[in-house]
Image (cartoon, rainbow, N blue to C red):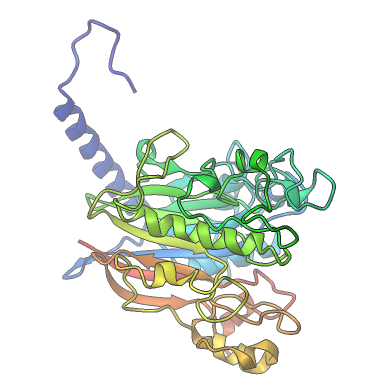
Length: 420
């Protein structure tokens, strides 16, 4: 906002910054009071719960999610809302939440579902939320899957039947500093140094699955990458959210596997100033985070560190990152139980099923995998971490269930951190 016309007296910039900070702090206090279950301060700082949930709130037709959320009667949305109410995150990313330009679906989900108690769970109110466009379903104008025709979900910038399908939404009890938000929807894959561009195995040329004309417009992010600075007790925590493409549904060129690897890599580079210099956001600003900035990386990364079809080392780009805190790993009792009951591919897995976050097809599919992550920076102390996957004997198991799932094939993952 500009302060007054030319020639009118203006506040000094330091005064403007101070007033803005005080106003945000006051707004934050009011928001937490209104939410009714505010975080506590202690020796570990302010305790804040960050969560990611691929809630499968996507629909086959554009506008259908708005229709489904326009009343409080949709069973799947009720289950998703109750899951959130049981966990009560302070900052929540929902993957696979269809985007609409007016943000109607996000408003309706708050009003008709989150603000309504379900089966004894208390309502939860998020004063702040963020949605933005997704690359899914946006036509590229090219034959990206090289099947001889142009058009359809596979030839969009990200797989989707219409623009915004499988999008994202963030809900927060803390202020999102919208003027500092950065999005990377349009960053081109070819502009990442050393990008794993897919190779057409039928030709001798390297990295030639996509033509030069296609690479000139091909976006790295299959949905988008967002840096949402959240103000927590006067401290800014950068919430870094995304949803890389699954590393399957392609061919020997592995175009989705390589894209998944580099979508994960974007955050690994972004949090190191020297490595993120090549990045540019949708507003034209260059570089990554400043040195020492606090962050939490969240999302359905579609990559298990030991099992499944992702390129080896894809998830390790974050899990073994020197700036990422992995002192606690979210786990559940339900993951091991379901892996044992379902058998199939789960019997050959190397990973601990207690760490699984997604219940996938076991025969002939990949089995249950760790796909969803909440990864704070090392300066944020991890206090607790869980995957919401109850045992089948738990009354809340009805919220996760078995196929066909009552809510989603993914489980909500949360981490409590102490923000200094």
